[in-house]
Image (tube, rainbow, N blue to C red; front, side):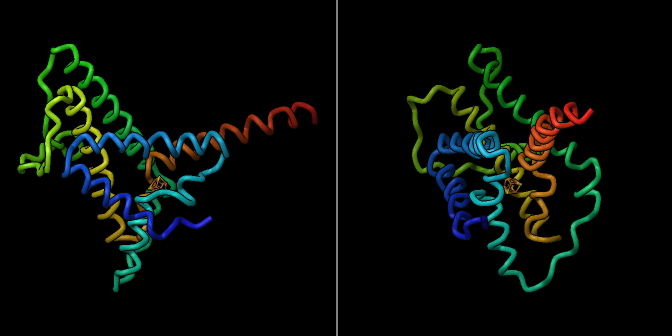
Length: 199
Ligand code: SF4
């Protein structure tokens, strides 16, 4: 199965719609749940192989490049970098969830700006075509946190695709790492009874 070439439009639409209204960034949750649902259903990387809009963006931009990118460093494929990025993803998601709970409880003010790599606030004016005044502030806070995660990983992926091969981000993408771990675990469970039978 090949990644559909036009799916990059969804990535562009995600950022475009977030600038129309930040609550559209909540759609970013689909990019986390759909790959996991398909992984559990098929026990293979169905999302990565055929439906990922981000990978489609990297491939589309990669094809337009004149210069050939550098080969992907070995540390991306075999080193600990995958685990570092996976750790970053879980820390980022945990902060997003816990800070949202704190906002709901009134123990913290909502953070209504994006942040790059959790730590760097983007203080530039954030364009919004319309605002949803009825939306609770905790939801707006959570939408900004999801936008920050999507923005950070997309910018990192774009930088990598510019320096190296178009899909270099995929080698360290948390979805890929989790998928590898899940598939390995399922395979070991499948082989376990056969092994026991043989012995
Ligand atoms: S590894 Fe990540 S970026 Fe690459 S195709 Fe899979 S989900 Fe998309």
